[in-house]
Length: 86
Image (tube, rainbow, N blue to C red):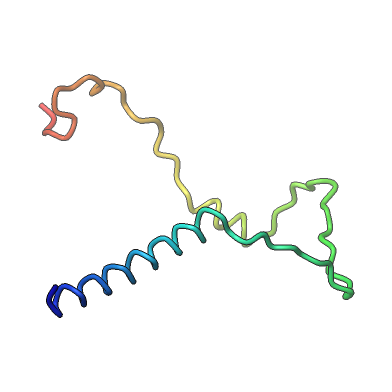
């Protein structure tokens, strides 16, 4: 064996070992155990009822939108849907 073949074998072996290591770590990940901290956390508050009241800024944003109606269904089934309309 030449020096070149030995070097290629060593490099190939290192790459093979690294690939097997990463495959093993991805197939069998470490289990993470979580512990509760002693500090009190911030509790999420629940909204019991939705009031339906909007402020003026929200109403002005809603009024800016326009309703353009529904899409026409006359071009369904065309051979070339992206072609020009006749």
